[in-house]
Length: 361
Image 1 (spheres, rainbow, N blue to C red):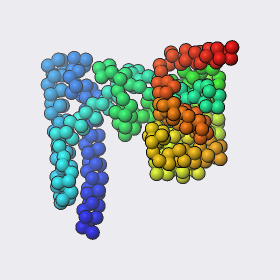
Image 2 (cartoon, one colour):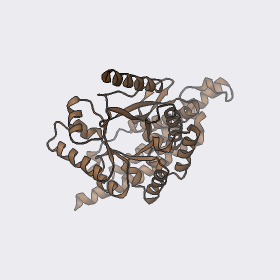
Image 3 (cartoon, rainbow, N blue to C red):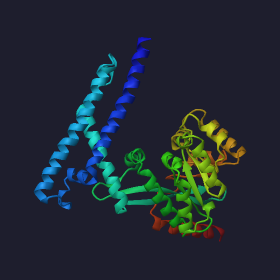
Image 4 (cartoon, rainbow, N blue to C red):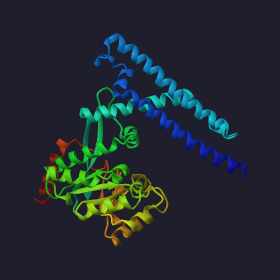
């Protein structure tokens, strides 16, 4: 009972302290993006009272940001210390927390600059239809080409974009860009775009999608929005918004199927056009006992519900053979193609047509 109370106390304390950390991070916004840039040593790009004054301001800002982050880290650590034995089980490095908070602020400022400076780009990975042995669609994958860091992994910046709300603007750009590219492809090729939970619950989602379709003149049936279980967990408003888009012809896919606790419930509650089986399951397909039986159950259930199935992360020919044998609709992965630049999409499709003609001849 004591252990349970201590754990509950720690969880409540963590929640309260997390809110304080977020509030402290928001306080830094008073200084604006210009101050962030100064703190990163870019004083030469700005003229605030001359070079010397800018340097002094940057020094003061750095000191303030570090002190604020360290103060919150100390509060966090002190709170955990009051949780008794849990303190020894959860050692904290205050300096690391302070550095992490400061790095997050810098990355968020860089994201804002990336939006303004056009640093994002899309790459496309094909999905191969197993019934026709042809490419049926491409998934648009976001890339950030940072001017000094190079390509930044989506795993590093998407969580911050989501938390800061910047994902709405970034996601809108992705939709417009993906539709514009797809409009130049053959009419039987669709494009899939990932939509975050924050975008799904944003009231302007439908308007953003319709504007992207209108600007590109892309038929709605050629656009597929990929959402996760987390998006549908936001409540009936999210589901209703997706259904309205689906009624206009836009396809909706459930991404990362099998990773969440309510995957089957999602299939009952929303009429998806496609479910994408997560790569973590595909990687264990040939080694985990019972995996093929689960695959057969997934494809059978999807077929009964009128949904297509796509296996993500296919890298081996033996995996492909199992997926084909158990009725998977399409596959995606390095076995067929890595994500490619937009300029290479038409060349890939042309090569595919040439190969088909050669085989027919």
